[in-house]
Image 1: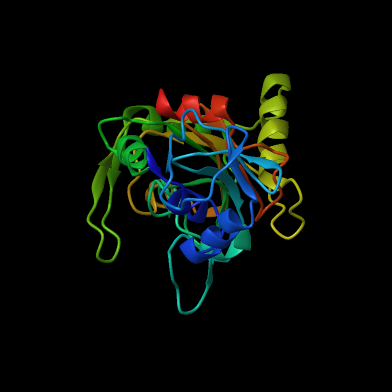
Image 2: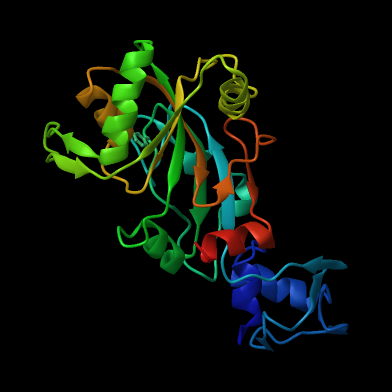
Length: 272
Ligand code: URA
């Protein structure tokens, strides 16, 4: 239960003063009856609220799937670059009942793809916790193409895990086993390549890249994917996250675009 003025304000209907005016003007009804009192207690699980005749979807938390584009950073503020929050519509620039809208994990400035923005701090904490081992899959473009022999070597290395050197102020780490699937020319691999390229390149002329492989990791160290390939003497020249847990990036979302997750997708994340 929560005051109606707070709830409507946290659903994008302006300040509490703005909501007071809506109530006074008989624009807000709860379960079919006008409400005038800003202190009216609302049950967001049960009550049906309409504002100016339109039913409002009441929610404690918000969950957004973004297809992050390059040149934007995963930060609240950045003096130099646009942030992922700058890509959001004005209608999402308000307080939410569940708290601060934040990124569930970070992608580098030059990494594209699946980014979840949410107010659900508990879910973020759980999915990013090393204990959860939530898988994250990336489509990777590499500087150096690989011979069959090198592919075998990479597959073995990734499947066992290996030591990654320190990078500037970041200490080295023992990368845990990961799964790599190369996009080759035989039929099933051709399909993999096609799928990877489809999600990687849709609507993205500027970043159209050849995807060499899909890599699934179960942890999230700083620059992890780039550092793992660098350790093997190669260089990541294109990176796109295509999956987190069981949740895949919706290929219909253009680069820099986003949409809210549906109930089924939220459940997928919550049961990870
Ligand atoms: N690994 C990286 O190196 N960069 C990212 O953005 C994500 C994973």
